[in-house]
Image (cartoon, helix red, strand yellow):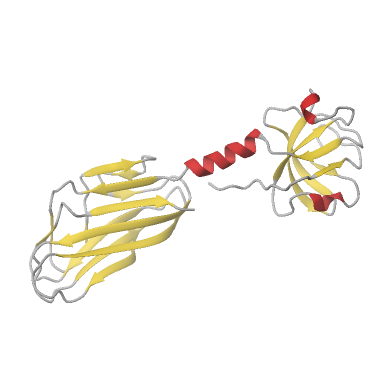
Length: 248
């Protein structure tokens, strides 16, 4: 989801020619095309020039317009509950901030899914030198219901760019061992965090983060860990997290 409707101040003109109730383009007065947004669609209102403002015209029509060339616009008729009708040359064509434009902005602001999952203080044993998917036992929050706690998979249903972060700590590793943490995308490694050659056997943790594109339908993300301790070791259940949010 993204904001697509464009805005520009003081964009107003009149129709250069009649249009019917089924026409999908219109032309404004010569030279006035530059007054309107040129880089995408915008909402405008058609209204009879005998009225002082579109508020006063009961037959006003909201259209979605896109500059085609010069002073000509393609239009999608009868937007936001209005009805398409024929308009005569000289009718007003005004770019306005409509309820639909505001709703699009509000939807973009509120459609920022976020989640935070953790192991709920339950350790997970992983074998040596084998990439092992981390499991998650609880959620702090999951604002859009996109995190599958049973399978440990985040599948965002809103397309966009996401910041993902994974944190894990290995309990009592072997001296000079290596720990790797990886965020997987669609079943394949995407970005790594690595601790090379532990010094001693104190608990060792690593963090991996990335900004990723998600298509909002099929893209999914998981966390995998691997170590070279030569024997099974535990991931600390009190300090392991997988979290993320949409940032764009």
